[in-house]
Length: 308
Image 1 (cartoon, rainbow, N blue to C red):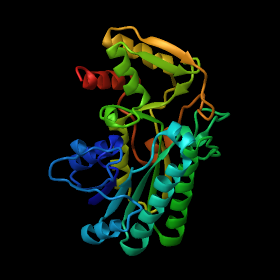
Image 2: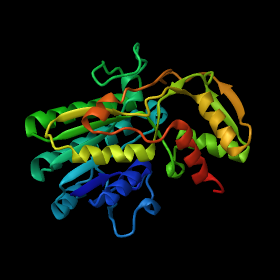
Image 3: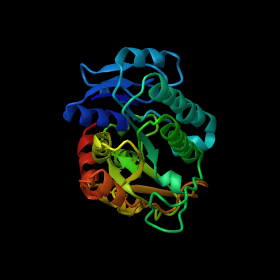
């Protein structure tokens, strides 16, 4: 298939491109490079520097004629969304709707895979692990925008017959996250332990997250594209293990061989205290399961960052 990867020069998107190329697909990237980098783009892969809200996006569709889309371009920093919700709306809602108008009406595609969120969507859930059918109660603008995106996709599927797979990621980490303006927690912790810098923890460090390695997330996108049914499917993509922030730091200390300098600060309002997502549906419908444990994934990320 010829696949458009929006945000393909970014952290997760570049790994999705890798997995698609490995699977024999033809890939085209659309990325405004606001957080992505050209160094992440494979030689020979077309990369259009175009914002999703730009009228120029239609020219790309008209020229390339895509079979499918993996949509990863988005504002992804939850804390940034708390201070600037307008940026979230522009990228995560307006950009998505423009993309859907082209992909469902003017230049129809056979599959639309949407990168959503699990941790920010379910909020402070009363029952864990979170499953896809439970109420979505986001407590950040980022989570609200992703939920709105899912609802738009539901509309375009039922009214315009667009086949949709929604992947709700837990906390994604791994190589290339260091190139983002807002570095992910695991990468930031590794860099700070390595460099002997202080790590500032909001709260007591006992807050938990469900970490999933980026290569596992990339494989989930490939599996979603291969699904033959033309329906609307929502799947959690997660490691399926609840891990505390302190636990991750202790692993990093072990792999680097240095103690972390920890500074505890007040918890941030709007941040989820506990998060773990069930990935049973992804195993059943996508035949996907994570290959990397937190220990293995952190070790691989430390190796990647070693010496940088």
